[in-house]
Image 1 (cartoon, rainbow, N blue to C red):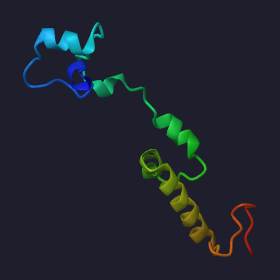
Image 2 (tube, rainbow, N blue to C red):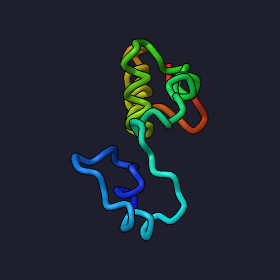
Image 3 (cartoon, rainbow, N blue to C red):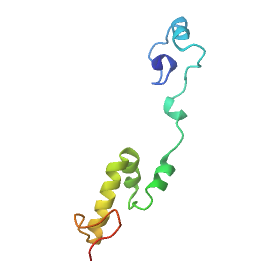
Image 4 (spheres, rainbow, N blue to C red):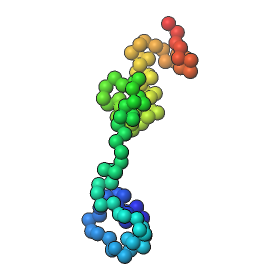
Length: 97
């Protein structure tokens, strides 16, 4: 159904209009590049991870792997500030000095 409606892009050969109509009904098939219909989300991700950003790639890492990237950002920040991650109380945002 998704292939016939064009959600994966256009196929090399067009579909039989009769078959397409039976499968997708009155839904208008996508004739443009499907990714063009997705709203831009980069600024949303940039806002969500703004406290961790040190380089442009951090936003991309967060967009692709939010949980893993957040854990990495916390670890990286702890290493830069000389904090022992094992001794830090992350729930209370405290660490031994």
